[in-house]
Length: 171
Image 1: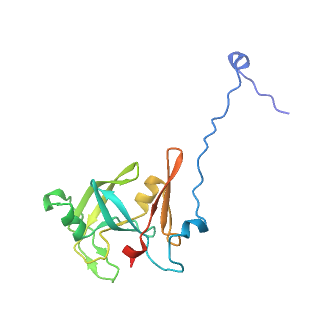
Image 2: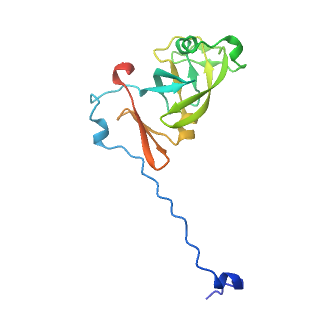
Image 3: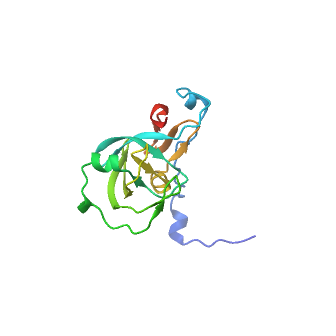
């Protein structure tokens, strides 16, 4: 048997209660697939607010650490070379070619009520997507993504927010 010594003021005080934090559970079910054509092998492509603008064709890639911005978005946001900071590391594109980035830019990216600053690497390369968001963004928001369900879900205050991917944009 062990003895625990408590200061006298602790003996006279009310017992402390543990803080219980109830968080909604992030999960996917068959109901999340209802508006998708199954079976499919489409990428998870969503619309997000980047730099204050609604941006379509943003691919969610949980296998990558790089956040990429392609020329269509760069021009669409009216960005200039002087807006970029230097980014010296070459990248390998999907087709295996070495791509030298134009630079890097930090922009706010909003998903519903949550805003996260994202450092995009700007590249001059063709892509059917306007941007790729990756693990750092997913982790910053606590996002769980599902390519099967074509959705991302994340906690926001005491509820679950979600973004539904677009099969038509992915194709």
